[in-house]
Every structure is written in structure tokens, then in C-alpha cells.
Length: 117
Image (cartoon, rainbow, N blue to C red; front, side, top):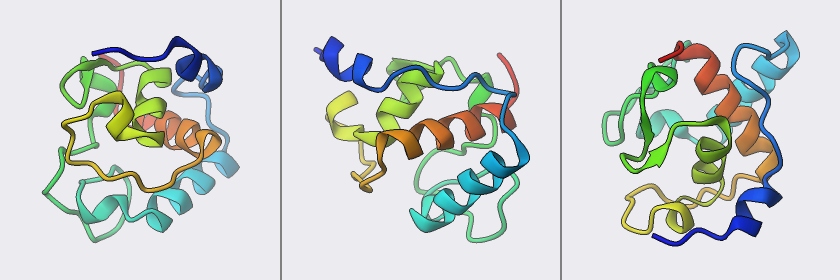
């Protein structure tokens, strides 16, 4: 699998898990609702719907990999949320049009809520 280094660098650095402000947490939750993440995934601290088509995101911080193939780091998780097919072409996850900045915020939220490995 080839990934463009420039693409990953364009994502910048994600905020480390555990450092979201209350406002950022609410923004991330709003983005998760807007993009319908709960339609396919169980999402931590979110009301229904809670789908089961995709993997549960409730313990994302404890997982070794994103989509089963990418190292579970803030940058890689954000890159996958932003452009899933580019990061893992066979993935079933659709491109939801999540901006780079919003993907970073969602990734930080999921890693913050999912605990550390």
C-alpha cells in the first residue's frame, strides 16, 4: 500500500488524545452526528442510533490499528476519517466529505474516549 507522504504531512499534527476542551468535545460530537457516524458504528458517549455495520469506536484508543491495517495514531486515524479509500482502498467506509480539520477533531475525540492501549 502506497501512501503519499505529502498527503499525510498536509494533515498536520493532530491534537493528542485527552486534551480536548469542553467546546472541542461538543464540536466533535456535533460533527459525528452531522456525518452520521452512528449509522454504522457504536460511538462512545453518543445517543442512538448506534449501528453495527462498521466496527465499534467505543474503544478506539485501545486498538492497535485503524481499519485493520493502519497504525492507530491521531494522524492516521484522522487521515482515514478524511479520505478512507485513499488510506485503505478496500474499505467499506464511504468518503463522507469530512474536512481535514474536522477529521482531526473527530479522531481526537474518539481516541480520548477510547482509552489508551
